[in-house]
Amino acid sequence: LKLYGDEQPLIRSLIAERPELGNVLVEGYPYTRAEVVWGIRNEMARTVEDLLFRRTRLGLLSQAASQSAEAVVKQLLREEGIISGI
Image (cartoon, rainbow, N blue to C red):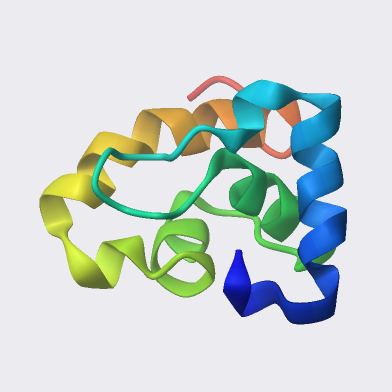
């Protein structure tokens, strides 16, 4: 969350509302589910690829980790009403 600077408390408030958002996307990497939700709500991220490659950079660091995180990211996109049926 260090990358978010002044917005870090806002992301922490997402975790306070929904503690499961504090879980990492993939073990061994620091990116949380809250960062994905933040990207959807505040940075206009609308695709799995955008969230994994641009918002978290996970896709650039590890193809295997990125693939492992896809299902979680899709679920969060569904929960936020961005996608349906995938």
